[in-house]
Image (cartoon, rainbow, N blue to C red; front, top):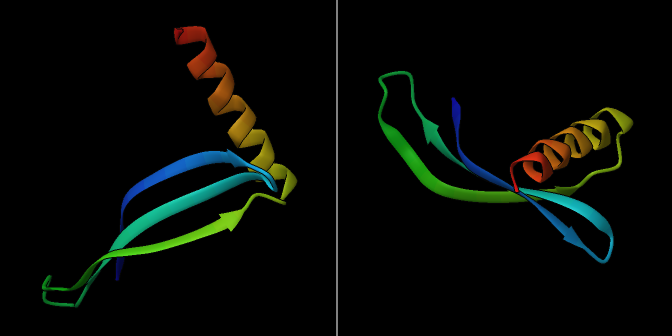
Length: 62
């Protein structure tokens, strides 16, 4: 099982990129690997909308 341990939304030259880290856990609950990192460029409209909503919420706070 993969457990999300962190994520970030980053603006870069290709648009928004989501990076995340996760740990792998076996069926007994033992961590088999940790601090695994992956990322992807946001291209799906649904995800773009979620990023915009998150940016709006953060802008309200500042």
